[in-house]
Image (cartoon, rainbow, N blue to C red; front, side, top):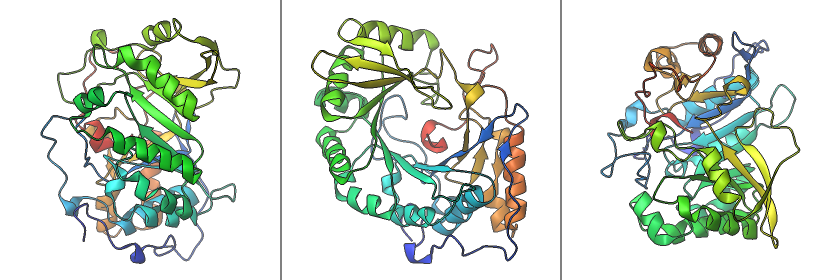
Length: 362
């Protein structure tokens, strides 16, 4: 067994635990009428970067191997989500999902499933792209269709300061490999931090426009080391747009946003044109249109990125105690039915979740 706690890909099959009777169709709907169609699956809490807004310089206490879901457990839960509970899109996250050596097998097993619409689910990953240059083609062949890559700056020195690792060129190679393989779209996620990379945001826009990448700026959220985040100290979406407007022509995109987290803007610098997205999770939350359900590395269902530990339901423990697919589906649906109306960051009593981002999955 690998250090990340996975089984051999040869042990995986989307039908390996299938009940003989067909599951009855249902939805992951909450009391506010929101239906979860997008499943985020964290494959590991580990990461090979140490980004300042995500974790301490010496890392975190990683989950013991036996606490993480095995490959067979991941696929069983993904299958229940897709075939029984109406999930139509699956995104594998981390930590860093490329650290899961069986990622290609997990993608392939997911691609064999069929949604309530009779199609394969959309499959994506969110990654820091370290090592992606060697795996992009295999992931595409396995069924991966979309990819989000974290990149906060085009400057190698700033990258090293933010990530505490000198791996900027490795990320760029991963981006080029994703483009060459034909993954579409390739999105870039960037967290903008005051006094660190906000002055170079325009350079990142130009880099993405020239390469045909879809850039998404993300407001920093209180999901990193405790005591580090303050609302007053973050770069807001409004401040970022004001900065970008001094160098680019920005026009709100016409296409409807739907449940997408990013507000899109058409952007041009006179020579290149494209779109940039702004994910204003803090200042302009989109909780009312949220369609996500999350499965943590240790098998807990979270209805919200900011859920508290008391709101989690451990499907891992149920599986290991012999629960049937029907019982797992019922527990999952029950957890989502109790989803709160919003994340509550603006509430006076808001407390940062016990889990950090790397232990939740993006």
